Length: 562
Image: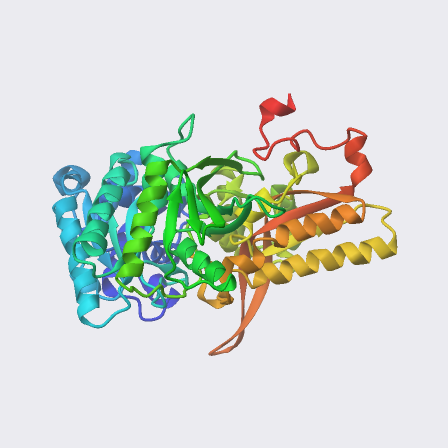
């Protein structure tokens, strides 16, 4: 196992033994799979005591796919059981599924263990809250839901994984293939919320409302991912020029803080009474706000579908009761700027469109090492799209000067005509940059003004909030959070319209080299991020009927194109 020892300094003995088992299993069929590759896979898996073997097998298959190593489900179960410490799947691995929940603490891994069920999980979460409250914590907690875990975050307190991405302080994990666990997790989170917000009045519990409302009252043609891709939106419905203008979005606590800012701007006390009139929150007899549930759905293309419904009177009343109770208890709304985590933007989703033609040309022209060729071809076999992390690994292996050239940019027909700023408002806090494309033949004066509008939008974007999954090197807090940039998209489109221009938009990927100081000098790494492709054209092109086929709908649906 000398190859492993030389590959990574100070490798943990347990990691080495697991990597040895993995390498022995795989290299018989895939000789190019090295011991160093095995150790990297094991470390990336971050194996925890009591890990569920079925969930580990799924993660293992995905990790090996990024290395170009296909693995059957039965083989993955057998190998995952061995990595988890069992002799085989049949002699211990299958027994691990009898306890589907496990506890993982980022700052106290020695406390990680299996849980008996959701009653046990509720006790663990409650004990965590009580310990923090006793230690004079901020008494504010946020639930974060993923397909396989219920996580807890706290304002101004972060934990990060090995690659520097923000992760929950505490997680209750389960097998992602068990679709019933998410609903059970939401029920458990509601039990905790009621105890600490309503019974004992000890804390604010955030992040429950949107996913709960989506589960209880789903959109038509319900999709399994909808609850994980939903957030609350508040609009100003007072009659006038700004009627139906969005003023807040995200979790309930984020929206309450935004309303506090609005009340202060209108010279009202933060504790001023708010009443319910129909579906509206009425403040000072004049200001009226209405709550919505907005959900993003993946269409497999560059433009997600946006579904919006107004909250029912019962849902709106519940939010108001919670807000008023918090005000009466004089609980402190910690001014942390966050964006609700949406599963559609998870960094492990397979949504990066790769220009495999450019990859092949680079491999042939530069005569890169054989293992790089195998890795690139192996990734292509697993699918045309990669996750952000897998794409970064591929670019590091290729070591090309222009990483952007390996991204397949969406064509005009795959984008949406931006008739309003709805798509921009939904995405503005979840993208890191804008990639503009100017029309051919645009005169110098209009080109300069259009670029200034795009630059202004980008400045607002970079001052925007961070995602729960944001890397720690990209945290830029902003003052009076969402209100600053809520209208940035509208300003951009209005400015382009005055220049006789329109814009088409959709998601794409940007990649760039980053250089940082290391122990042995400067170290280069790849940073891949989601961006917004802004394809600008002349307004008369739309009137001539030359707009793209999908531009009439934000969902980019093929049925409409037909």
